[in-house]
Image 1 (tube, protein in one colour):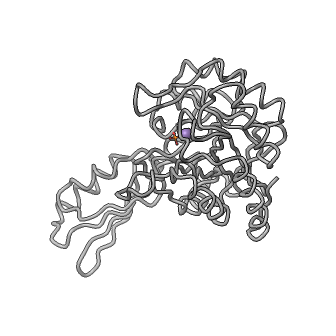
Image 2 (cartoon, protein in one colour):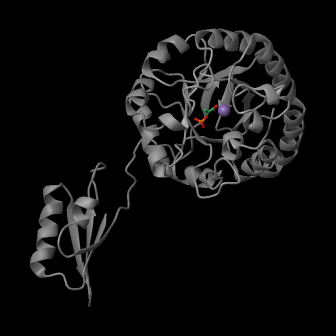
Length: 339
Ligand code: PEP
Ligand code: MN
């Protein structure tokens, strides 16, 4: 940590800051230039709140040089993490894993029609919400356990991994026999009790970025899961809320290279929630692949006009199949492969 003192800082103020740092367990190196004193504080404390220093008299600026997370940091596994998610499929390796399916599981017919089509097009995973976090309490809330059973059956039939969202702790046990990947939705990225419980299992957790979360906060949420011993975490950028109203969210594709630099964890992109509009999904999926994403999460529905949630952003199966063909052409250009 670097603490720059104000030009007007007195010797007594500098001394107070040094004493404060030493009390917190830091070794302090002092450099006094012509105009300003700069303190370099070196120590192992990761939970230090830099604002505690910023409020001390005479302090101009505090700059943290080490990340506030440890297990999620790239330095923990410089070679990167390749996560085995089931059926021999790995996220974070050469293959870019595509997970597709409806926003919500609505019926057996709907799920099986969509699952068959996405499997045929080359998807590796089947997504589908059983427990739905809806902005309105009057909207469809999901079929619950019935949906989980249908997902497992369809996943087994079409050899697809099953991905579904967990909203609360009590659902973990219910979901364990049915899902391969637990999705934590944007709204629950900072549900720390839920994250801690997911740290106790060993199945993969797909952790979505909150609508107003920084990438550092996303990595700190991943740290909660990893601190419990579950290192099988895949991050997901699904769009953040900005002042732009044309799209549902603003998809931050730059999250991909940033996360790859900061962390060893794989990152996925969800262009469906990231744009909210069907015709924007394929261009953003192609861009995400070119940017280096490790996985894609895409909503597909055979009859999106009648979908019970997120119809406007769901691709028709034919559109999804065409997108997969395009992704197969782009992948080799960036050293990747698509099933
Ligand atoms: C979803 O995947 O259907 C979903 C609700 O996602 P998010 O949490 O990103 O809104
Ligand atoms: Mn959705």
